[in-house]
Image 1: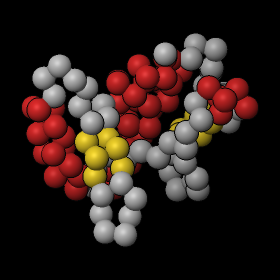
Image 2: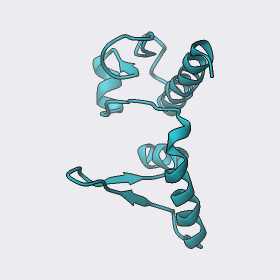
Image 3: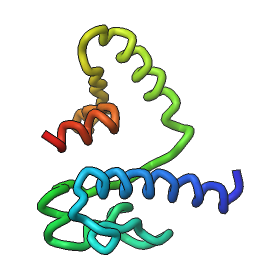
Length: 113
């Protein structure tokens, strides 16, 4: 994959998350939340106003990479076990804190409540 394609793939996910946050909180505009420029330091999705940081108290980093294939294999297994429940995948690596992985739409539905 060439560098231009990699950057486009990353921007796609950043834009997807930014647009979903704006949809969830209609009072926010693209001035309140924006995507980082390539190689800009800090989070990938920038919460630029106090209002946006109060409504969405998360530092948002996005990664759109093929190397996470194994995690998605585990996610598929998790979804297979979740008959009437929302799937939750917990992962951990040596000397690292455990992470909880949930579906993005489920995450935004939790924020709506």
